Length: 103
Image 1 (tube, rainbow, N blue to C red):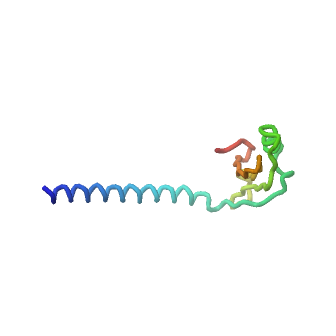
Image 2: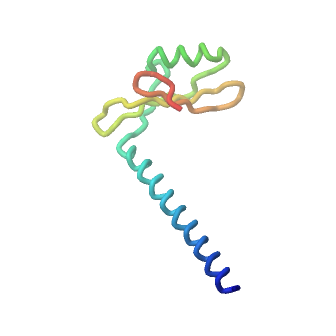
Image 3: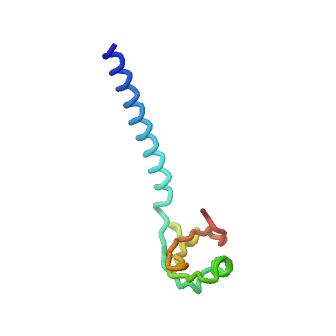
């Protein structure tokens, strides 16, 4: 009986390891899709009005610390990242190429 319980526990443990390995592989594949993208720092004044106005409208105390455009391998803009300081708290906001907030 002890051997059966031991083998059952071992089998369950191996299934858990296999599931974690599969999860890691799928996460890696998703991350690899964006390897050809890079962030290029830009002046905050170069952000689309929709982004800069949206940030200040959302919170008057927000200040844009850094701004980046995200470009693909061909140089086309695929989005924006903006580092914002609000009440001594820094946060990075992501936007798509149209200036819509991307979660």
